[in-house]
Image (cartoon, rainbow, N blue to C red; front, top):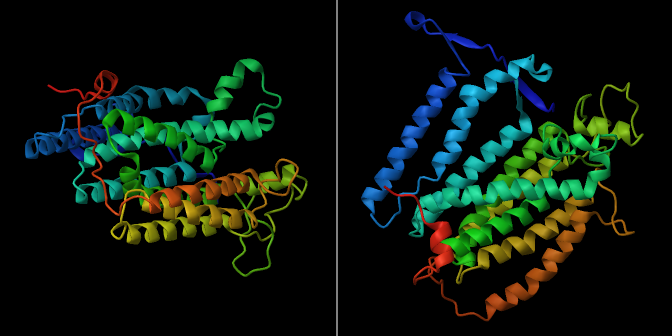
Length: 373
């Protein structure tokens, strides 16, 4: 229940016998492993194209791979000059869970897409279109909601750095969903993909990601619950976000060793995410028309999220009510989903092909054309 699970020393080196001591960072072991991963990705893309020439040779992943390779080789070694990295590179529990959730969710969606006759490369490309706008949306939502707290006492010149500094937490799930939705519809427009058909494929994976992400919240100590006498109540130690937040709200003395027993709402939310993922996975093969899996998720999640907020103690009411901002959004999603479900019920019980036939417009062709050789 600490933000940092482990620190990797920047001067870490492994003794490889005859090869001597090889550094982990820089031009060392991590870069070598990352290079092997790049080779594997390249071979996988080539194999997919050879097996089906209709699959484009999309090498856009090389940009992300190259940036990470440059960070390993040149960026991380330079961190030795900063005081905050004197003990090594921190491995954040929340970030680790986000990575595991992102990888697991994308892999499951790629597997499901292949079973529907859609190239898995589409899913991995989509993952970037969801991840980056999702993080931006999650951070913007947090800054809008808690900007006065984030920028309090911070010189104006440092605002840009503080705005993007996620080391102390500060993202909101509903903001991630809204930001990801913008990236999602842009991707579908450019790739000529029916949004409802693709949504049914990725919805179970979204909740897999939420399940792992909430475990990250538990490790970090955010999104904490109200006090409880239940035997599974959790006491967060000093250094956890829940502890610091309660001290800031004058609900706990800073000399205390830990918080009172609190509802582990993060674990409740994680279980909720995995259960919705399981339910929508089960329903996926039983759907009659595109969009039904999405509709099921949008009817269940707002209800469970609204109820979860009743047990949380990290947010206050909004708009002069006792309802949190997440409860207001849950109500809005539930209401919007009702006419959406009615719309689906009036459509023929036929699953339309996910890919839209026909020629691309010049805009789509210019922006979505993969790099080939």
